[in-house]
Image (cartoon, one colour):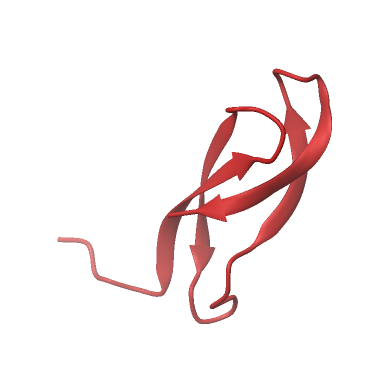
Length: 53
């Protein structure tokens, strides 16, 4: 069985379209919600993706 650690699977949602990314983050190092600038395939440019629960 897998042990429960500090890593959690999160969804990053685009601020400009319905595009989403799934990734993992370490809850101990970054307890608050994260924002990353990633490429959005629907609008074809880099936009800010915010963590959604």
